Image 1 (cartoon, protein in one colour):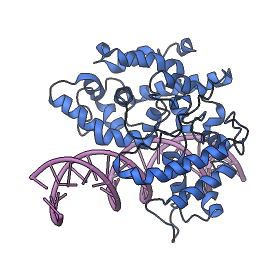
Image 2: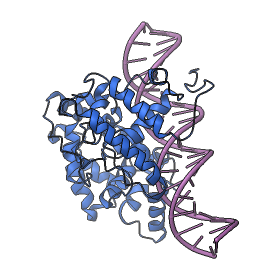
Image 3: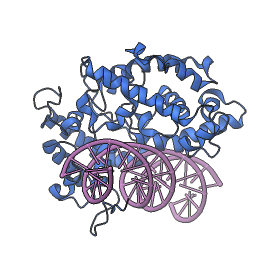
Image 4: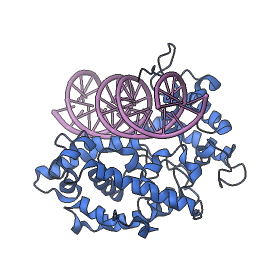
Length: 322
DNA sequence: AAGTGAGACAACCGCATGTGT
DNA sequence: GACACATGCGGTTGTCTCACT
């Protein structure tokens, strides 16, 4: 409702972030943990709005983020999830712990959309293609969730329900406190693989990653929110390690989308919820993921992707996947 | 070698939702 | 129960880099 935009203030800087700003933000989060973004600009002296700070952190500075080069598996996963969930990037991103929703969204808009279009044009519809748009549902490719609802045989509410189930399952898993997989040591910020353009910037990001490694190691362990301020908001802090429990999760190792992700998902701890609330959306589909994976790899089943997934996660008995 | 166009990525904007008072 | 505030999400735009002519 009549809420004033957070970035209304004059003097708020916009545009690309400089390495210096990144450092300021990172070091602040190091000390206070992520969260309470409102206070970040004032406390850091950054001339950015809180939103911008949060975005910068979650999309770029947060450790454990893999950049560039989507693997084939990731691609497939995205296509199928998009078909299933629509443009709910945050939910989709929860299946790809190393990727940010923004990244996935961009990748979809720049690569996959075209790819699928081509496929359809070729009369193929191959993989996600056919499945996804349910017959070109998205036409323009945009408006995912919205248009999907019209074209998809299943209502969007059903998809939501589906996601909710994931969330619920995750919650239950947390409650049962499965222990997390060991924080598989990150292969060091894979970050620095930006393609071309970002190369220059990558180096600075790399530096930041190094910086993070330094401070994230307080107790030797990225362990459980052992981070600088292991509490509350720190959730993210914990994440800060390139091998975090929250974001990058162990999956950090290589093509996480594969097997790694499963473990990764499990790695989700309640603490991670703050920053990764997005993750909560899709929940930590650890078990589901493996099934999803096989489902995905089983291309033959394509064509009814949705039904396929529905089968994967029977509405009636989600518990079965615990 | 220079100019133009296309593609890719980062960031911003506005709306929706959740939480606290 | 209503209101206000903070955060999260998705869509869109702007900028930069690379490839081609």
